[in-house]
Length: 126
Image (tube, rainbow, N blue to C red):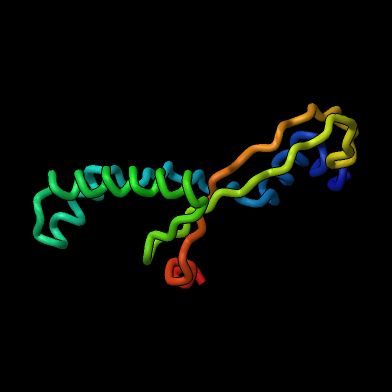
């Protein structure tokens, strides 16, 4: 009789709730440093004017864009390497994804831009 009283649906609910794993904490939204924040940090480190650093960052972005468009590869020393990659065209048809058959539309070949961190940055996260 005691067994039946403990395992009523309501008691079972509380028992399962107590045994359930704790929910993960929600991650805080992380914002990256802004262009002005980056300019201020560089200006204080190099003792230059913030306006001069802003001009340097703007011109650096322009140079990188032109070089990636022209050669397809640019390395920013100590930071990253920016590359372009040609993704091939995909044919239309049916593909099995996760056990389900999906109808896939044809997509043309396209160029994508990827950034790869340098080895020094990769070592920070090992």
